[in-house]
Image 1 (tube, rainbow, N blue to C red):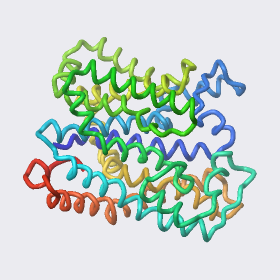
Image 2 (cartoon, rainbow, N blue to C red; image 1 turned 45 degrees about the vertical axis):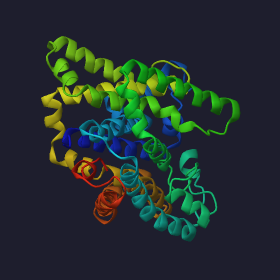
Image 3 (cartoon, rainbow, N blue to C red; image 1 turned 135 degrees about the vertical axis):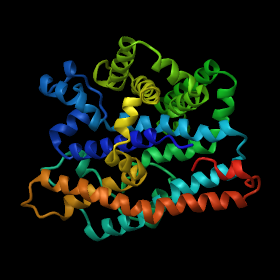
Image 4 (cartoon, rainbow, N blue to C red; image 1 turned 90 degrees about the vertical axis):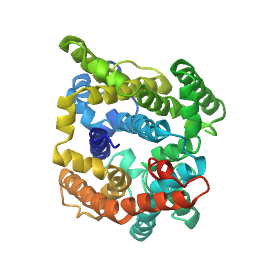
Length: 380
């Protein structure tokens, strides 16, 4: 069964990534927000302004990396549901994931590559280093194919593909994560943490990132363990007195803002954010009030198109920047880009996302081991 509140939560996170990338266009905001995790008490900028931008409750609505880490935990939770209902053959599962992830990427990247080739983008002095650093490389057939099939980083034509790069690779070994979780949550967390540390060490020593998908294994594993815990954990949280429940919400907020509170290695910051994401999912599942808010129709609609919105928003923002008349205020261009992103997300959802899910299920049923009702219902 789909948990619609978590779909909506994914939609809110996707919209937060859109706002985050809009803010990155401004040079001063980019210096503050661009994944550096510099706390207000260590910044060279105005500490009050940095604190307001990173620590106040509204800051969660433009927390880009934290939102992506929430995606990873949500993926672990949702994908594990099918495995908990019964055995899922590997090949049908991978076919569904391939169609789910790759087909929309292919449909998005072809027009984006054509647009970049026609525009020949040039840097603008009023934009940030992030905005001027996009769409700078030569467009080649091999590069477009690499983007469309999530083959290799960097993804200079559509930077959010970096997270789908890891989603796809973890999907290939996801049944192993479920088996490891079945051996016990303690062992599963320990092994996944050791894998993440090993990947961080490999990247630090070689700079190659051969095993970089292991960096986010604890986030996917946290989702799997939440799913394995079933409704019991949310029920225990819901049974707590009001004070402890509010304390858990406050702890969740602190964990999601950890990179702005305590400097540290990138891996430790991501792990703290991942713990906050897992706690947020558990709290949403335990709170009828939170689920009622997430059931609001506009939020539910965002959840429906969240994957498509994530795929299209950066190309739409960059296209708006390069195509808008120079006299237009930057905020006006970005506001139009947000609205256009929502429109293109709706179109992509109907033209590519829904058909890709249907095709994946149809192909999976025909694959060896794919027959049967359980395989047909496995997560897309």
